Length: 186
Image (cartoon, rainbow, N blue to C red; front, side, top):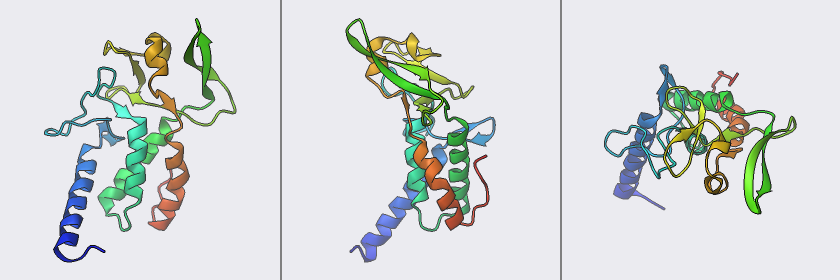
């Protein structure tokens, strides 16, 4: 449906968008990992969003970006390496044997992480840019090591744990086979 000059402009815009995605991929100890929830429009560095959205490597956004990159029909080597590295990061950061439990706390909804050997994998929303450790943040903007340390309203009013990365783990083998990629996620 799109031809001529408009098609060329759309292709250039798409190429620039992919280049921006690749340029914002976060390195940790020299290794490519994932992406932040927000990146500065000038420097492309991870940046803060709302008070509880600190610069970090974000499980949800990283999973979505990987899936977008996997849709590229003929990915170049840089795109392939980006997908491989980010997919490995997803695999390395999965949480096994835990599930998010909803319960009532003083008559109000609350959540907590509980042991469950049969639970599907989970990923945290944010991981520290330096240490790679998960963190949670309330409206005070101060990172905490556990979900229980932030106020109840933020525990229940934000997606801190979800199965975001499962779609990547499911899609990676087929994508790798299609593009002749022999690297596994293990």
